[in-house]
Length: 508
Ligand SMILES: *[C@@H]1O[C@H](CO)[C@@H](O)[C@H](O)[C@H]1NC(C)=O
Ligand SMILES: *[C@@H]1O[C@H](CO)[C@@H](O)[C@H](O)[C@H]1NC(C)=O
Ligand SMILES: *[C@@H]1O[C@H](CO)[C@@H](O)[C@H](O)[C@H]1NC(C)=O
Ligand SMILES: *[C@@H]1O[C@H](CO)[C@@H](O)[C@H](O)[C@H]1NC(C)=O
Ligand SMILES: *[C@@H]1O[C@H](CO)[C@@H](O)[C@H](O)[C@H]1NC(C)=O
Ligand SMILES: *[C@@H]1O[C@H](CO)[C@@H](O)[C@H](O)[C@H]1NC(C)=O
Ligand SMILES: *[C@@H]1O[C@H](CO)[C@@H](O)[C@H](O)[C@H]1NC(C)=O
Ligand SMILES: *[C@@H]1O[C@H](CO)[C@@H](O)[C@H](O)[C@H]1NC(C)=O
Ligand SMILES: *[C@@H]1O[C@H](CO)[C@@H](O)[C@H](O)[C@H]1NC(C)=O
Image (cartoon, rainbow, N blue to C red; front, side, top):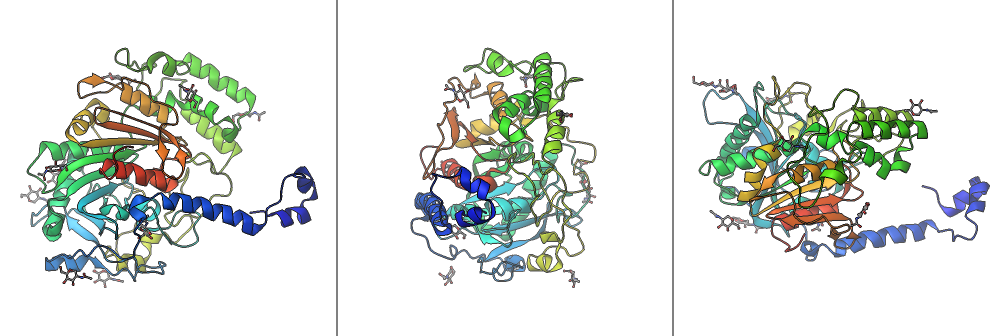
C-alpha cells in the first residue's frame, strides 16, 4: 500500500499528478476503513448483543466425546474457538460398512439459534467442504492471502449449528472405495451418514434443517433435498429450505458459453483484451447465436421453452468462447482467477492450495499437516487434498442437471429456497443462471413472470449490492463484487441471505 508521503518521496511524477487532491495520512486512510467495517457490523441485528462463547449444548451419548475437539488446540489458531465435534462416521449401520465420511460440527455461537441445523457442502465433484469451513462461512478463517487465521465475524455459527461434511466417498478424509453413479447414490450416502450422526448427536434430532452449498453442490443439494422430501421417515430432521451459490443447475452451454462474451464486455477493463481479439469474440458470439440470446429469449414471463443456441449442450464446434477467453485472460494476466476475475499478479499464498485457476504448489497444506489431523480426529494415513485426485463418480455422474429434474420439487416442498450468484464469477456466469431459471417450471408456472429489478438487493449497512427477485417460493440473488465463493468474497451479503432463508428476516 502506498501512502502520501511515500508517494511524494519516491515517485515525484505521480505526486505531481495528484496535485490538488488531498494527500491522506496513513491514519486517515485507516480511519475510513475502520468506519466502513463498523457500518456493516452495526447493521448485523443478531450481533447487537455480541458476547463470547457458544450456546450450552451437551451431548449425552458417551460416543459423542470421541469426537470432541478442544477449541484451544487448533494449530495456528491462537484463540479458543469453543467446543466442536469432528471425525469419521460410517454411511450405514452395517457391520461390514467400509465407507465413512468426515464431518466437523459446530454448535451455535451466542446469538445463534438452537432450533436449526445448517448443512454445508462444497462441490467439485470431489472437493472438500473444509474449504467452506476455513475460507467461507466457518467461525475461524484462513483465506488465501491471509498470513494467519482470523475470527470470522460473519460466521454462520452466528445463525445456528452447522455441519460441514466431506462427501461423497472419495472426497477429503473420507474412507472407502467411491462407486457413486448418480446423484441419488450421493444423496443416499449423505442420508445414511446423517442417520449415524443423529444417533450419536441425538440432541440434534427434530431440528429444522437447511441444506447449503456452492458450485457442483448445485447438483448435490437439490438432489439431496428431493431425496429427503421423498423419504419422509429417513431422517429425524425437518428440512425447511436450501441455499445454492454459483450452482451447476443446467447445461454447460447455458451457464458458461452463452453469457461469456457479454460478461467480457461488462468487465472490459478487467479483462483488458486487445481490440482484434474482442472483434473475433464478437463475431463468434454472433455466429453461434450467443450474442442476442438474452434479448431474444430471456423475457419475463418467458415466451415458451428456451432453445439451445446450437446443437450441443456444451459447445458446438468453433463455439467454445469460454475456453478462448480463459486462455487469453491467462496470457495478459497469469494470475487470472476464474473464480474471481479481479485477481491480478501475484498469486496469493493459499493454505488449501486450491481453488484458483491452477493448482498452487506451496506446502504444507493445512489439513494435511499431522498435527491438524490429530487435533480433529482425522485419519493420519490419509493424504488430504482440497479437491480429490480420484474420481468420486468412477463412471461419471449420470444425473441430469437438477433444473430438468428435482429442483422444482425441492422448491415446492421448501418454505424458502435460495439461488445465489456472484457477479464476478467466470467459471459459472450469472446470466446463465437467469436462463436456467426462465426455462424451469415450478409451482405451476415457467420462470419469473416479472423482470428482475436492478439494484434490488440491498445489504444492511452497504446499500444496493446487486439484484434479488422472489416468485413462488424461490428467491434469486445476484451479488455484485463477489466471485464464485459468495460467503468468502461477500460474507455480509451471504449472511443476510441465510438470515432470510432461515426466516430470521422477512425480506431478502
Ligand atoms: C460471529 O461469530 C464470530 C466468531 O465466533 C464472532 O467473533 C463474532 O463476534 C460474531 N459476530 C456476530 C455478528 O455475531
Ligand atoms: C450446560 O448444560 C449442562 C447440562 O444441561 C449443565 O450441567 C451445565 O452446568 C451447563 N453449563 C453452563 C455453562 O451453563
Ligand atoms: C455388506 O454385506 C452385504 C450383505 O452380504 C452386502 O450386500 C454389502 O454390499 C456389503 N457392504 C460392504 C460395504 O461391503
Ligand atoms: C457401492 O458399493 C457398496 C458396497 O460394496 C454397495 O453396497 C453399493 O450397492 C454400491 N453402489 C453402487 C451404486 O454400485
Ligand atoms: C417443520 O418446520 C416448519 C417450519 O417452521 C413447521 O411449520 C413444521 O411444523 C415443522 N414440522 C415438524 C414435523 O416439526
Ligand atoms: C429448456 O428446457 C428443455 C426441457 O424442459 C430442454 O430440452 C432445453 O434444452 C432447455 N433449454 C435450455 C437453453 O437449457
Ligand atoms: C490479441 O489477443 C489475442 C488473444 O490473446 C492474441 O492471440 C493476440 O496475439 C493479441 N494480439 C496482440 C497484438 O497482442
Ligand atoms: C495414527 O492414528 C492411529 C489411529 O488413531 C494411532 O493409533 C497412531 O498412533 C497415529 N499415528 C501417528 C503417527 O500419529
Ligand atoms: C440494468 O442494468 C444493466 C447494466 O448492468 C442495464 O443494461 C439495464 O438496462 C438495466 N435495466 C434497467 C431496467 O434499467
